[in-house]
Structures are given as C-alpha cells and as structure tokens.
Image 1 (tube, rainbow, N blue to C red):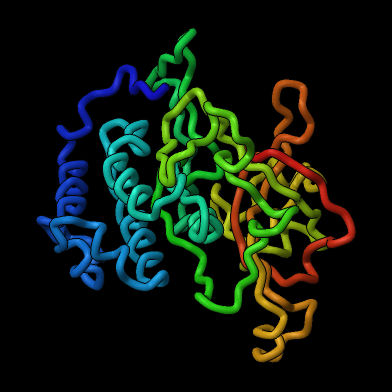
Image 2 (cartoon, rainbow, N blue to C red):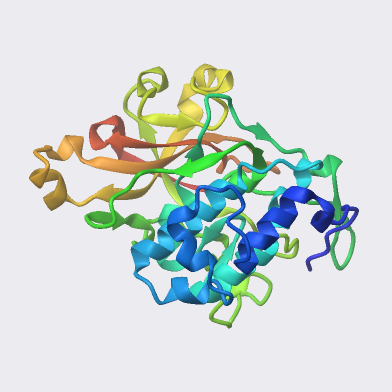
Length: 310
C-alpha cells in the first residue's frame, strides 16, 4: 500500500514546480541538462529517449537525478515524493521494476553506484519526523533504504564507468539482487513488465548481496572510496573496521584491464561500501556508507558473506 500521510502539497513548492516543467518538457529551468534538450523538449518524454542508445538513456536519467538532487525543499522528507511522477515515467519507459532512484535490469548496477557530489557530507533524512504511512493493518514509520540517494540530503553524481568492458556481477548467481528480484510473492514482485515501488510499505526494501572484507585499512582507501558522510571514513567505521565490507557490483573485464596495461590485481572493481548494523536480532544486516572504484588487490577474495542491505 502506498499512502503519503501528513505531507504538504509538493506542487506548492516552487522548486518542485521547476521539476514538473522538466518532466513536461516545457522549460530548460537553469539546469545542466542542455545537452539533453532534445529529450526534454519531447512533449511525450521519455519516448524519444527510449528510442536512443542505451548509453544515451543512462545519461538522461543520470542528469535528471543529479539535477533533482540539488533542489532544496521546505520539507526534506519530500525528496523521494516530489520526483514520483518522473520516476514512474522512467520505470514504465524502461519496462522494468524500479524505485528509490534505482532501476532493475540493465540499468541496475549503474543506478546503484551513485556518489556524494560535494565536500560536505550527506545527511540522512529523518522520515519518521516528517510523515506517517498507513499500511493495511497499522500505522508505521516510512523509511528510505540507505542504498538510495533519496535517503539523504545533498547533491549526487554517479561513478564514471565506461559503457563497454564491464562485467556486472548482479547477473551472476552470487551477485547483488534488488528487493524486487528476491522472491515471487504477490506483495514483492509484479507480473507486469514495469512496476514502480517507491513508498510501497507492503514490500521489502533490502538488497541481497555477497560481501567481501577489505584487504587494506579503510584509511588507506581515501581517494578511491567516496564516503556518504564526508571526505574521511566515518568515525564509527574506523572504530569497527572489521564490520566494514564491500559489495562488488561490477568489475573491469580482464581483457580491458590488460589492454590498459593493468595486471589482474589492479583490475578495477566498482563497489558499495557497507557496515554491519544488527537488525531485529539478525547479524547479517548492513547499511551503505559509501561507494568506490578500487583495485582487486584491495578486496579479500577468499571469503564472502551473504548479507542484506537496508
């Protein structure tokens, strides 16, 4: 069930109105989207984008989300809600499942690998203080998972990953899985080719993944890892370094690494950085704290742990 409790009307916010203009293609609205003018000028957006190359489609949603993340709202809890119309249209156009700024299918890995785009750390939004969601049986606080940029205040960008030469591990048996790929129950998946999931409190929101330890100290990873909380590793992660792990979302293909003059240990890996957060008595629950591009030699390959990321 999706019910947006005690919210003000988001369309009364001037900056949300700017986003609405972007969705309708009626304004350029002082954004960095000038190179996507053809897409935004299409009155049936995103139809034109869908007939373009996969790379062009990726750049469209990345630019839209980067721009949107820079808007400020009188209520920060509106962040995942004001973009709902645009996100629904993209999910439908991609003919996939999606929500919280992430798409299932071919765009899954890239959309997960967002990063903080300012020197200032991102602040986690307290949704419990701003809104209440009503399920079929009870009231419950609405939360956004930590793997989503919608859970934080602040601007984002995406890791600069080449369009070719990447092996995406979510396509493997031990790869990361979205909440919508975890089971086939009626509450957590849809038989439709496209389904939007943001704000549906009847569904799970956790990712399922296999995590590896780092083989180097977290401190030495600065420059390769972008922490959500700020330029330096969070204090709590330095104190509990053994609880910090990485989830490999994708990696450079060996042939591409060799062509770049890299040995197998220097092969680039695109990872989420997570930390243990015991939940409801479980020890396999984690939260995201960053993202990065690290060489394979920094990852302990001999041991993996199956985890859930909330």
